[in-house]
Amino acid sequence: MLKQFTEKVIPTFERSFPGCHGLFAFDNAKNYQKYALDALQSGNMNLTLGGKNTLPMRDGYFSKSNDPTIIYQKKMVLPNSQPKGLKIVLRECSLWPTNCMFLIQCSIPGDISVQTKPNSACRYASNLDCSARVLLSSQPDFQA
Picture 1: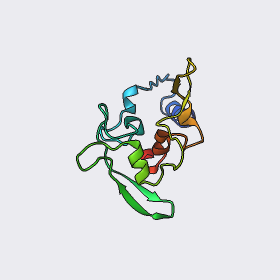
Picture 2: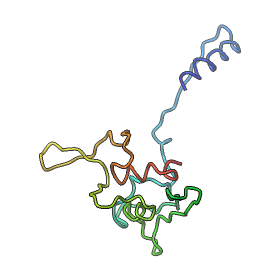
Picture 3: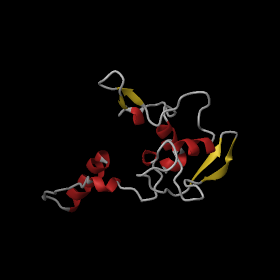
Picture 4: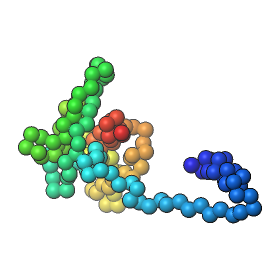
């Protein structure tokens, strides 16, 4: 945005209004980061079914690695309207790892030796299958 502003907007303004000063204001309000109520967000999902603070999400889609040309619908709620958990959705997409412990989110050692806390750098890591939330949020329908 800065490059476009300095290379296009300012020169255009100076040509259009010679000798004038321009004041450009940018609105970086946090509410522009709002999503639709039914948006696909892995951070709003529990590892297991439902939960108190989970909202129903719209359906997504996925393809299987053995035939990426076929697109399958990914239902995000059960027939009884209960929101699915991360584990169920990842299993349906054949993404849940077998024979290993898979966490809801990456964690790092906390201040106390038996405590862990979320790893704030996790979402920027190159390892997209380090946790259930990171893996699901890296899928095309969640990215869109």
